[in-house]
Image 1 (cartoon, rainbow over the protein chains, first blue to last red):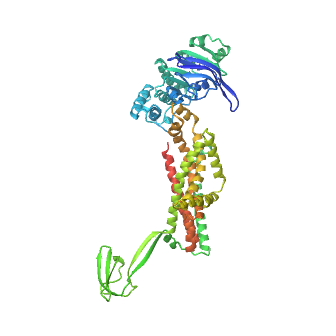
Image 2: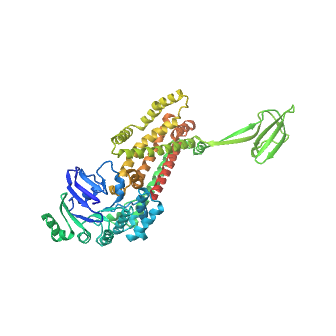
Image 3: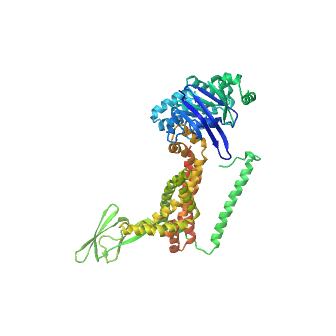
Length: 245
Length: 335
């Protein structure tokens, strides 16, 4: 049974002028699957991802996450968001808190863990992403790659069932991309359900169970990485790949 | 903070030396000019009369009320007890400060003779006025912060009732003169409220509180706009990151957004509160004896307007500068 089930969702932004960001997109994601969404900028892939934890409210269609219809206004969206970790392009760490406090906050406030429990879990995760020694510093003292790893650890601290990545390496200096991708690869190997919007074709090819190609708000092509990179069916996909590879 | 001049031609040591000198010379010239003007004008400066309006010492004679002879003076520490025996054998005792004692054993005393002097000191009018100004301002600042914070949050709420209430409040208060608002609070609202209170057997409320309310509500409107701007200056991603972790709007606001907004809110807030301290000088019109009204009273009794108004201005400066330093300290502590 899919853990995320998306049916015909659409999203239009009206300001400053109408843009159909996502049109009639459907997708099922099985537990443990890693789905990579690629496409040119402005193709609606980030908007689609943000619909999955309702950072954007889809205009129509249905989205079932972990058995809950998140487009139902009466659903407990905060409970769902606690199960769906999100990593942003610009990290969005809390600059007024130390690294450790960044990880502790939601554990204590949302998961109601004690400070000791939260700190224990935070330190485990900081070890996992390789920056335990930086737990007491403020985010602005870290490199971009380190910040993004902290952001991943912060999302993981909630022990989520699903992780969403919105272009996690796009804001990084090239030499720091690898360290973030390594953490994501490890997560995928451990069986985390992941939806990743990225421009990293190498990552898609290596880690993805499925690749989606979006353009103008529509999923044009969907398939295994092998199929996608060696034998793309759609003309637009071929064009995109020829530009990028 | 000043902007680095790296964008322009590098400035050498002589540049700073020259312009610092220009500033110092200018300052000296201005001070000298003021001094020259103050001596040439037909005005007798009596700065020595000013301190009594800060701390007033009253010296009072302790006088005997009967005729007789000092039978004994008993000293115990700083006080002495003078015992006077009248012609008919009646006896009276006076406890007086030993240091100012003027009589000895055996002295003959007529009624009204001074036995010793006693001095009482109390804060003068200016100090009392300063205290009232400080009290009114502090209360209004606290009220203004609370009111401004909630109005600022209401101002960015999606709920039309909250948002429009906030806009209405802000526009009405910012759009009318503070003096008129003070009159309305005291003469209209105050009269009504006090009448009702008296009718129900309660004590009427002191004018000071109407002054505090007027200032707090006035300041709250400005603080609300400052808070709104501060919140909106925090990057959108912060709210998204907090909400994506499962925090509610209120939790995200309190734990993530407001602490960051605080740093940006503090400088304009300091300016607003400095304005408030100065605006409290209007409260004299509803018979609150704050610093300005106290100064006016001192001027009319001392006939030393130059000294008193200068002192009054300096006292306001002391208040506002202290506040300014305090906020700068907070700013350094935040983040």
